Length: 77
Image (tube, rainbow, N blue to C red; front, top):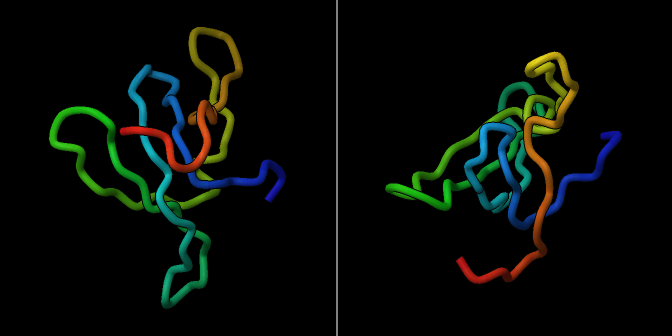
């Protein structure tokens, strides 16, 4: 993958913060997946395709990353 994903804290382009917990593989397709949790509200655990996590999107005419890395492993959450 072009931009190496690693465990740690990320900020979503809409402002919420998330912790990337693990990289995993889909058992049927072997697609790389991201296991993560929200760092707000009920702090739910979610799964998303790594390609989607790592993509760039256009918002208000600007190209931005969907999730931007902001902190290393072991951050206090």
